[in-house]
Image 1: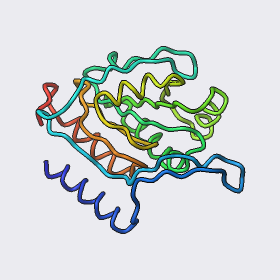
Image 2: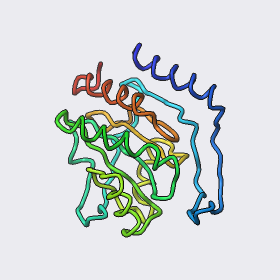
Image 3: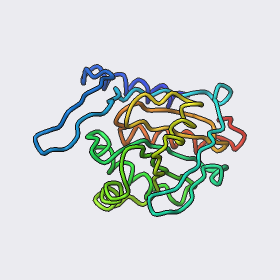
Image 4: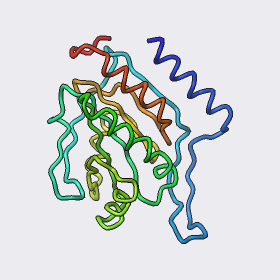
Length: 198
């Protein structure tokens, strides 16, 4: 519990310095890239084991054509991340997500991207650029985001959601996730008993 409070306090302190709030921007930047995205304020919300919703039921097809279903990962910690290739905060947080996936691969942590915007060409180019080692669901019909929305509000791109070993929502970050904050949230989820208690 103390770690969770420290994570939230750190996030709030960061917000005070940055002065960010959720906003919608649109248009095109000087390079011709789309700048329309909903940015979050990087706020962190955590739920105690007894207050969690879920399990999240989310399945789809990855950009490489493989079928993905988070139910296959029950018993492990799962990190879900919404993104698209021309989203500036998504690109900024990508190295931290890649590092987390690599560093926690042997600890039973799975990452899954959710992309409702990009065709395969743009998404796969992004994955090559950042050397992304985990799959992303090609969510053209919005089914994966809708499934997630039914359990926890997803009000920004990017949004990162940490699922506990039972598939329930343990934490959510709206906007760009800080690498150390995400690691603390994942560590908390890993430290819990399989039954959901810390």
